[in-house]
Length: 248
Ligand code: CA
Image 1: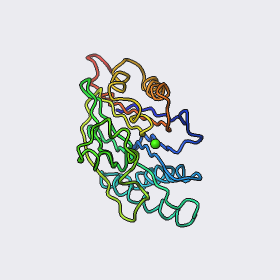
Image 2: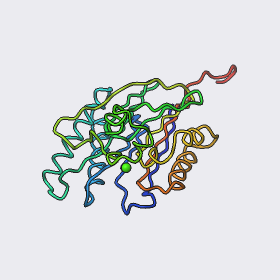
Image 3: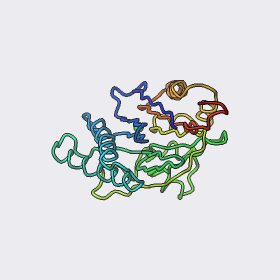
Image 4: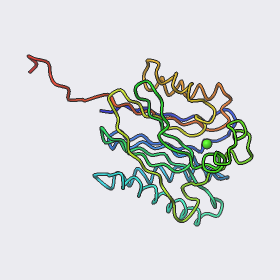
């Protein structure tokens, strides 16, 4: 069985929220998308992404990891099609981090710099890798974390859904143990909140809703320059635990 909760906040600087997210516990689908592009294009791109993923997973019946990757490719086509039809939306795009949970497996597809983290055995692991200039070029140049944080290309994505005709979707699978937590988030959380702060919140007792609220609060306390979206998914163990002796 899984338990899940998600929330999004505009932050303290932006006027609108370009992040979109979806929780579909019945299908095991959880998605965060962080849109970009002026004139409401960012909201549109991220919304098309989550709607396309949801529609494809429902249409598939028995969704597989390939369904998830295909759905992101289809979102790419749909966003490009929408941008062609509306010149004001030209160049819009979005990140996607999508998880399909089929216990004990979780299949993850990602493009861009929204992240997935796994909290297991009281440790936090980032299970996605950012499609960013910093990650793919800057680190290879031997620049320090401090230099990368101030670099003019620090916010540049090397891939986004909707940016090009063909898209490369990174896919992986992980195994969830009872008690494990998956955190999906936009960069409005992870770029301002260090992993130590995330870990501290995740390991404290409390409901998923309380933890999501604390994650958002942590970003707000650090100035929240960007929209913040967070989803938590917990493997809560087997719903069909053996009945005690004497139970009917
Ligand atoms: Ca963002």
